Image (cartoon, rainbow, N blue to C red; front, side, top):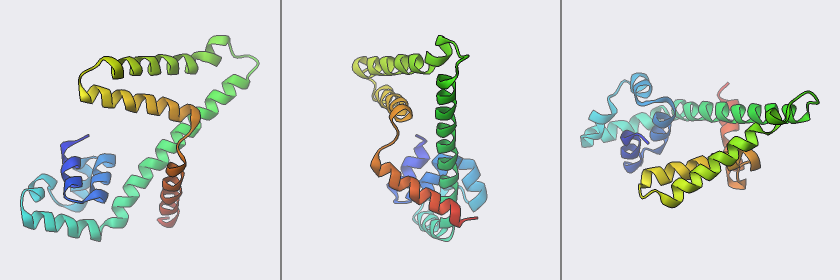
Length: 159
């Protein structure tokens, strides 16, 4: 995660942090007309960032929602492709099983990194990798469904 995102979260600027994590620091700075690092360095700057977050809340939320919608669309497309290949009479054994083989390799490799690496960043990445693969095959959690509904509502209301 970008250090700036952690600094924004530390100041309670969660919506701004989400937009920066999603769209990038330069893009958000350009749209808001402020240097985030300079603003975080002073009390007046922090107050200005809180004000900007409130004034541009809809825009910032939309940036996060757009990214989430793209990610969910990509996952749905990948699942659909996998289903069509598996239902095809003309697909080879390898093409029908390559996604599962790669998932098994990713989970095994991620599990090995999780078990043997002393580095916390590597262990965090391994958990992310395993979670992503399992999420592809088994879907997301029930609490994530509520988040998905909120994101979809934001996307619909912004049009």
